[in-house]
Image (cartoon, rainbow, N blue to C red; front, side, top):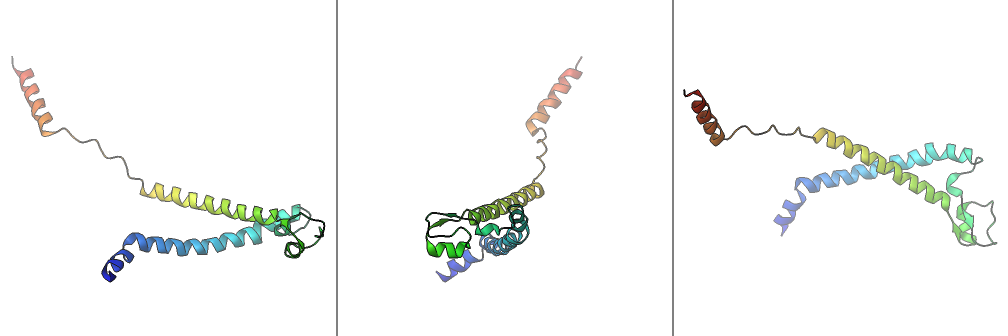
Length: 137
């Protein structure tokens, strides 16, 4: 059983998958920083200088509209649409980057179409016979 597990774990696909997961986790942190630290602040500025992740809708009258999202959640239910939009933007950026990587890999691994096969031995023989018959007087 140990031998089987070792063979499974050392297969190329498993190692490649592990490397992909580790790189993907690091890439996710980069995208999160990109969205939270570079993209969302200008969007918040356009929306009146508000922190985009603190946008929410109150669902009861106990929650003051000028509180932060964390405090608003303590007072009652809220719809945190700012966080949702931020997570959706994370997804779009990651999906687009993965699309570009897959597209690049497809271009690199694209093999040219194989040349059409030459005539078979039988076809060559038939061609020779045809040519000999044409040459007869």
